[in-house]
Image 1 (cartoon, one colour):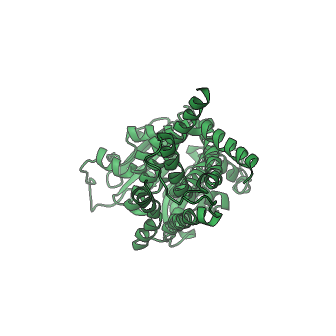
Image 2: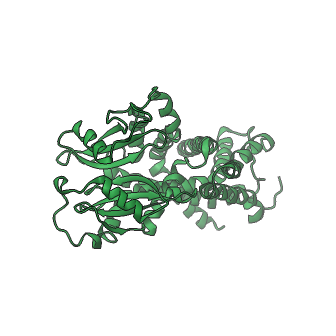
Image 3: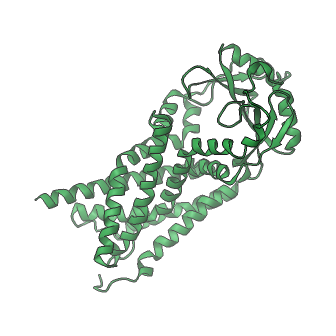
Length: 363
Length: 60
């Protein structure tokens, strides 16, 4: 490589890293416990619980919804999801006049309508998640972290290019442990950087896609779902809505053999102003991550359409497991944690090498 | 250490193998479940194995 070319890549590597290192360190540090969210919350929130009537009949979804909303007067339903291993329906509601994004979450025992203890959403984990997602700054924070993710991708690509001139006289994996600290850390930085490249690129790129969730869903609503709402003008108010149970039954008929995952109520990010969006997922390892909604007219309870998600919503859906590392058992999570730690070492050593360079120049 | 520059293949051969194995592991684990998860996780574990190998065998 010519010296000028190396200089250009070097400049790119330096600045893409410097701009983003502190934020990437924050993402790595908060991401480490987040990898084990499920395991940590199992311990933190552990509570013996049995449903009020384990063998009794289940309440209808309308009854569950009413029980949840009775605890939050003035709020409207936003989402409903279903626990897999206990008869609990989770109802998320929101105050339509309150601040955006502030949701109430109520796990309801479907055998009694009473509140069940939560198995997710511990305040500490929620805090870490929020910091990791948007630094408590909402959409601008998310998009900013997405930009930092792009910087990370740039740094990895330029780092791999620069690996060649650094390694042209050294066998792969060399760590010159007896040389100066600077040389030693340069070797660690190069070794870990090139070894973790695939993982960092996947986690970085899927992280960037996840930061685009809001615009991706908004685009979907404004294009593909738009034509389905042409018949209506005013949003379907709570008072004029059809039975949820009827809507879900109708949706199940439209998508037989699929598993009900969650319901998005009218007016939320995942639905239109006029529909219950009833989301189902498939049963193969891949399709459990991909959802298809049946849109049910919230006024009549009739099926409007099955709306297979477009490629960019599918990309968003698949970006979640690939970013979280929660799709291959505990072994994969442990690897996620080790690679996260390696990334912290790469970021730290990169910063150290840059600071050392400045000092050398000054002296 | 030889004075001669190593070829691109000599420089990038091993990293390329790890890159391909990692990527296969990352995507494979998404496409399959059960025992395959362990197999594909092992592919991704090549990153850790190669690092440990280098730290032991290539430290000087």
